[in-house]
Image 1 (cartoon, rainbow, N blue to C red):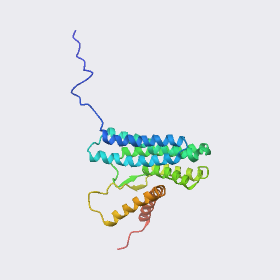
Image 2: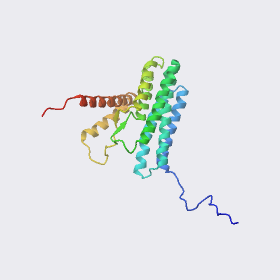
Image 3: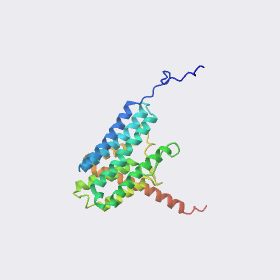
Length: 253
């Protein structure tokens, strides 16, 4: 009785799947910054931890653009980027604010940190599943990098101002919960994805960008934190404006 020929364990005709090196280098660097922020917060260096989160945010913004410019987008890169974001903008900020201010609150402290961490995970999962159906001009919920900048920037600024975590623990608690819940809300935030860098822009736009760089160079912690506070509030203002438009009666002909 003849046996049926078995399939070869290795098929030389199958294409070997690889990963693109350049964009994933930026993602790995962002992941390292998130891990570094966790280590620094455990050692009590909260300023260094907050700065590492902001550097991770810059690197996270570069990896996708580099992939599109070099035509090296891949499903692996998208999944890897999400996992990196979870560490850098989910776990790291939650642990930073917990170690800085929330751990003395007992259960309320770690519950607030968990709300933020869970909000970041849910925000990333929803973004990945709704990527093809949402309006590209707006984010649904506060983006996790912006939430991370809000929490880490608060820790950074208060430390420079001379406030300890114990002095600001209830404000830190409220800010952490607010950031976590805003990430999973349906509030819309402008994504800046419709900005075309190849077209000509008015002179005032270039002047505004130059002024922004000058302010960041002069007082980086205040400028960055202030920007993300305004960005967080902008979503609520857009939602309030939409509610008023719905409630206003139609104009009479």
